[in-house]
Length: 335
Image (cartoon, rainbow, N blue to C red; front, side, top):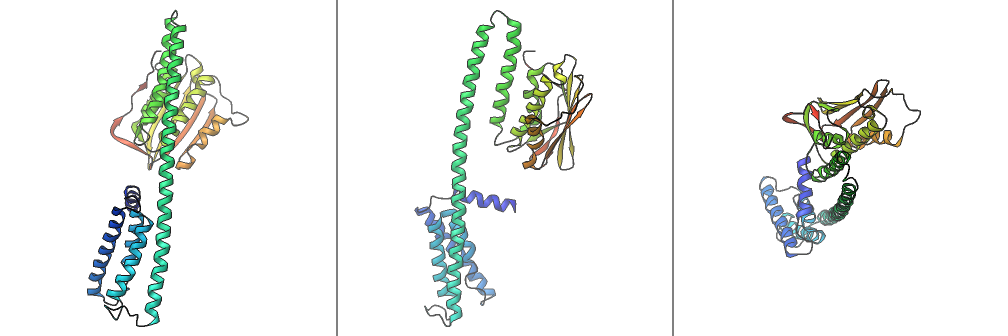
């Protein structure tokens, strides 16, 4: 069923422009195919419904070639069925009112199908237009952010030229932030490694303080962006209030496959004592609600010895890479 839906979507998006010669050519091809198929059916069952093969033909013609192609297919289907398959054949006479009603019902149903299919075409075209506009805006914003980050990088390099140790630390963090953005932009239409997201998001927080265990996992669609937001929020909170706010603190991320899902357990150790907050902050709500629309979940546990976050990713948007193993530790730049 999914393959059929994908085929229809491909026909709508890649079909000829409505009103062109190619679109009408699609209509004629659909009529010809429907007529030949109906002739074959006539050999087995001469009394079959005259218009039975023309309904899918006019649907396909409309989806591929537009409303005009669908209307042409509908009218030609009515004429050919009347001439070839309604008794008495090869005349323009309708023997009784049942045949008249049949032709009128076919035209009515065909008109509804053409209208609905054309509305679908218009919706898809509008979505494609919005998607192109969104992509342009995202690319422009990404370009501007990169330019601003480059400006900040140049200013800090100039101001910290007398303090190379501080500059090495700051420059590493800026590079990590830039790399994380590039990673998400590159992976929007393909798979992104979960371990790459963990690496780029956690790199600014120190060498050897972040460990990951488990198989390599690829994330697809919009899920990598959401997971990156969650990991970034967890890492930021850990750096401000949790394990990464102290020199001896560390974080582990255990990844495993559980049936049709991928589970990630984020666990902090060695930080300040943790108490359950009296109210949920925006960051906590972001973590716990971001995966709802994907059919996944994230649950925060405020244990006294460290925060634990249990993340469940749906198998429809994530898969374990064959033969892949995650690195033993995540390492950062410039630290």
